[in-house]
Length: 234
Image 1 (cartoon, rainbow, N blue to C red):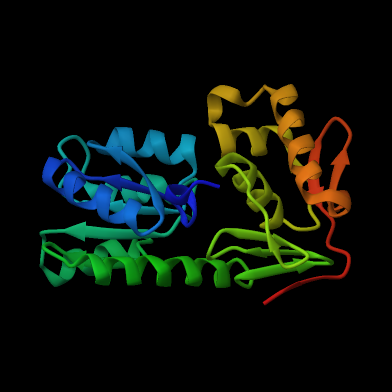
Image 2: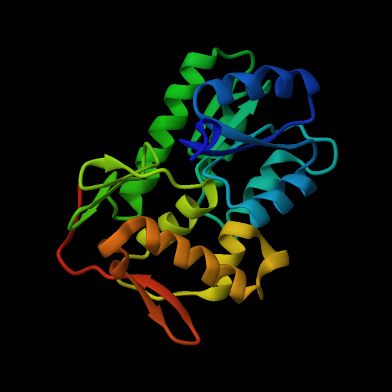
């Protein structure tokens, strides 16, 4: 797993170039990978295709108002959203939170506070999904907040896509996740039918997990699941 993808993917939807120049290096230095969208339309497309872990959303976008983007985003995703806006009216904040934003920060803001709020939003989302931040099954430990996987207390080096695949399965532990859901969630809609591609990555993932690779079960013709036998989440 590369350092820049260790903590997750952040999608920044903002039309101000200076915001992107400011946020990208700061977020990457903190361990996140960064996707950029300059319009609401592009932001919604990337949110659907790339399945980011956090969205930073400006309200004053050139094509669609940020509140409309937020409403459309909530129709298909529960990704944590932190609104970043120069609008300081109380009603704007209330409206954004009522539409499903997880937090609201006024511009200008400090990087330290933003990073703290990103971490908090991620923890709250895990709690709402009924997951602890750490999943354990036998010798395998998956820290969903730090995005780290350990086998027999030794950190496994997974590629970003291998980790994203494992994370999607763990978030639905015990349930079958279809080929299409996995392919769309990790590679985007353009690869929704590339089942053979998915099989290659599942095989790689099982090999890295060794004997614990048996936790990844195949549902022939449908998809895969993580077996929940003797697993715990804390």
